Amino acid sequence: MIKIQVNKLHTLTGHNDCIYALVEGPDPRFFYTASGDGMVVEWDMDNPKDGKLMAKVAHSVYALEVDKERNLLFIGHNFEGVHVIDLENSKELWSIKVTDQSIFDIKAVGNELYVGTGDGVIIIIDIENKSVKKHIKVGKKSVRVLSIDPTRRQLAVGLSDNSIKVFNLADHSPIHNLEAHNNSVFALGYAPNKPILVSGGRDAYLNIWDTSAYSLQESIVAHMFAINYLSFREDGKYFVTCSMDKSIKVWDSDNYKLLKVIDKSRYAGHGTSINKVLWSSYNHHIVSVSDDRKISIWELQL
Image (cartoon, rainbow, N blue to C red; front, side):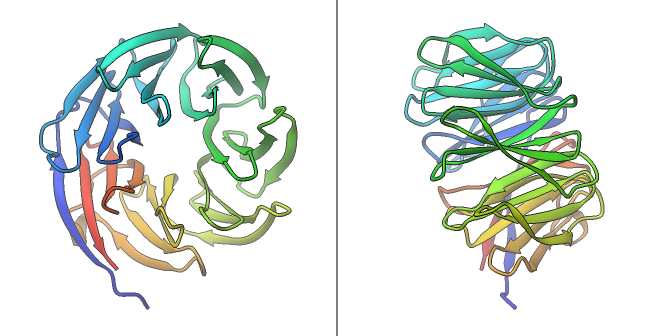
């Protein structure tokens, strides 16, 4: 058994509503959060106490994405569309109204931005032309989470109809329809350096898929309540999950064994649902955001 020591380094406050979105910056020293109050904030890992307000929009924000090549931050403005921030000048460059639905996730690949919406549609935006390129109707229920396999150029989509759809990025053709969860799929992640896709959802199960044929390898009862998100460490050896049960769990990517539980009683963790978690590639600290309006930064000593 690997011994893991957990130290809570920081509790950050400033948001006035539940925090739903979390993404690492093009410079991984910085990360960005967004919340139900429409505030989008930049945080510095080296000086985390004071956040910098990057944008304030009219509605809640569930989704953020960065374009590392162009140094852009994409904000999914619910019931409106996408706002694009130039991170060098901290200014809005452009915005595009694309939906009257919630935007649950955004992913950027090359010149394309994939926007997952509450009516089961993926909207593909051409970043250079600042225009909508395509609509793909993938289901009758919400698109909740997107994950990209950059090596095989595939897009996995988790939906509220309990399924995971896999698409070819080259021509957006469907490849697989995966069904193992019995409720909404909220968490998806392709493992770095190995042919594995991990999924989690409202049913509190983690499902491990071998991406060579997308066969189900293992199904694990992982949390008490819904798994809201997961994040791999940069080297792919470990990943973390966060849950509505107020806990963060650390897993071994080789054998899918649970290594550590970070919760309120043991480590002064969050008091309500943890909505997103990020394993930082800057210093390998873990960042989590919650309905309790707080951001926590954790140091793990493996």
